[in-house]
Length: 165
Image (cartoon, rainbow, N blue to C red; front, side):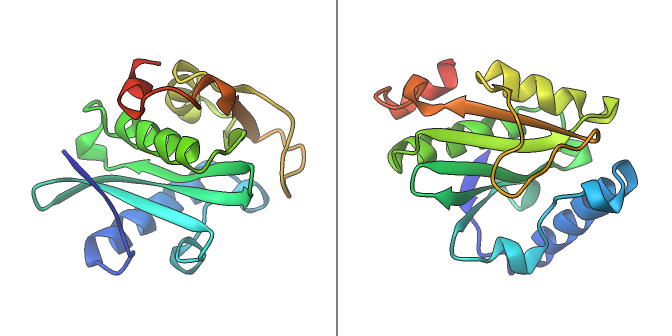
């Protein structure tokens, strides 16, 4: 698998993000859907990665800078055919390394509270994320789960050791 920063201009990523947005819309009511569209993902405060197997797009994820000390994981999605291959773990490891390089003190995320999102919540928990109150512009929502990781557990570790979480 090859992971790279993406400019969000390719047909493949447009299709994967369309699937991501449709899936989020199917799983959550509109007021509880916080997925970013292509334009929002192209913002200067967002870094976006894609994972490839040769010419096949396997997944994507992003890091949004909330402020100089706090980042947010956004737009994590693994293509249906690539699930169970470690794509999401590779993306989280990459985002953690980048957050550590930026010296963020905290990395947070919002995901769904429904059973469909349990694998995502379990993934983040394996990396040390724990439940937290809403952050940034989020508000309490029964359809959302908020999680955070204090980066003191990451900063100072070798980048290659992050996957040993």
